[in-house]
Every structure is written in structure tokens, then in C-alpha cells.
Length: 325
Ligand code: DP6
Image (cartoon, rainbow, N blue to C red; front, side):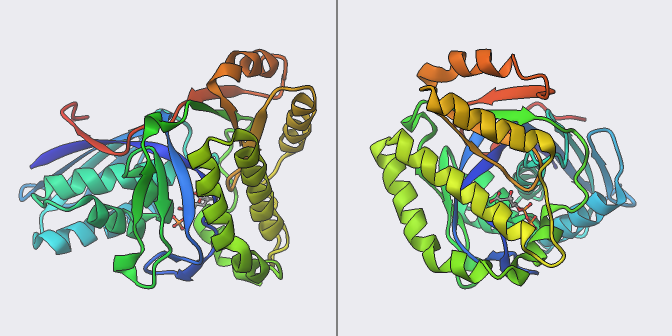
């Protein structure tokens, strides 16, 4: 059977960085994100007894490293369904892969939902998030709708994601800024393995549950200033950990720092915009919808910005009838 799923990328407000169990992808801490309508992956999967081997094409390319990870994931689905058929997988992103724009999240969310349906399985949303997590941790947060919390959990079954607020709860915008389309040297899976070598990692974990609680409260109250301050500090904390890992990782480029300073300058002049940064040089800017136009006008004056993508909070992963083959 053939099935297609469309999954949004998500941007984390509280970050997932460091694992308690590498193989099961159990995170060292819980995290919170929102789905982005502007960054999506569409994936079609078909299992058939006629296929001699798995065929995987992502963004018109066959990349060996990505293929290994996808086949491992297909094996998980085959095992659950009790089938041995090989698969054909075609996947397309509408944004550059591995540029810090969270492509593994939407990629594994779409793959999970499409493969599960193509294999004839019927899983609950919770079980889909558990399965997606095994492919890529952040992918579990792209399955439920809107604002999502991923509980760290003590074992595979208790490490899952749920929607905490629907997408229309808060009219904020997320502007993903592209300053570099280069694939990063150290991907997030590799970078995370180093997290525990940072002397600040254990300090981060002491306060993280309190931080998660506060963030949820700020979203609930729609307290944009408190929310913004917290997510900025959180992003800087993640990068403080990468920079103090052994070996050290610096994901930023000079343009990243220029943008950070500009945002602080604009904020000083009354434009309420905050940033977050994942494991890459690009920034995601968050503003209230009423300030979006003003922000875009400012961004147009910054020559370092190659491209920007405006999103709003969005639904999670959905099945689609628009198959890619
Ligand atoms: C910085 O989900 O890509 O984006 O589980 O090893 O595939 P793996 O890691 P991944 O890590 C994402 C890290 C992050 C923060 C976040 O999304 O929470």
C-alpha cells in the first residue's frame, strides 16, 4: 500500500540537547516547541513484494548517510507490522536540508506517519510520537498540533509528545532567517553526544523543569515579553553548552552575532522581537502578528540575510492524497 504524509518543522523554545539513552533517543530533559507552517516535508512511502531493495530519494538525491537512518526507521515499522516487504520512499522539503532549519524533525515525522499507514498499521498519536522519536528526537514534536511538549520520560513508552495549546491559541509569527545554506559540519546528533562534556550541562538540568513550567505559564498568559526573554536565554544556554563542550562546537557565523545585536537594538527602540537559534548559524525570530510588517521592513535592510520564511503556529503531521509517485 502507498501513503503520503505532510509534516511541519518545529522550532524549540526549550531545547532538546543531550540524551540519557542514545539508541532510544531518550532526552536528558523535556522540551517545548511550535510547529511551523512555512517549513514542511512531504513523504510518500510504498511497501511492495515486487521491490527488490529499499529505494530512498530525499530532495531528488540519494545520500548514503541519510539512507542508513531511513532504512533503520523502515525496519522499525516493518517489525511492528510483521512485514518484510521492501519500500520506495520519496521525500521533498520546501527548505534547505541540514541548515539549522530542523529538517530531520519534519523528515522523520512525515516518514513515520506515511510508513505506518503504508504498512497497514493504525497507531495512536502518542505511539506515533514514540516511533518518530526513535528516528530523530525532535521529530516527535512535529506530530501533535500547535504548541507541543515532549516529556523526557524514563523509558521509551513514557517519552512522548502532546499538544499543549492549539495552533490558533496565540497569533505569533516565526520568521526563519537564512544566513547560510551550507550544510553544518557537525550535525545535531553528533553535537549532542558532546553535551555532557560541558561543565554547564549539569547546572542546566537542575533548573530545566522550573523553566519548562514558567514557559508554559507565559504561553498560557500570552505574556509575550516574559516568553521572549525566556526563549532567548534558553537559546544562549544551548550555545553556551556547545561552545564549552570538548571538542568545542561553535555553530554561529559572524552574521549570527550581527543579527543578535540588531535584534537587541530594535527591541531597545520598541520593536518587540526575540530570537532563538538551533544547532546552526540561522536564527528564528518571534514576534506578535501586529509587529510582523515592521519586522519584515527592518529585515529587508539587512544585506546578510539570504532568505527569510514567515510562519505561524501550525497543525501537526497529516496524511495526504497527493502522492509524490
Ligand atoms: C538543537 O532531533 O536533530 O534542534 O535525536 O539526534 O536526531 P537527534 O537530534 P535532533 O536534535 C535537535 C536539536 C535542536 C533542539 C531542539 O529541536 O529541541
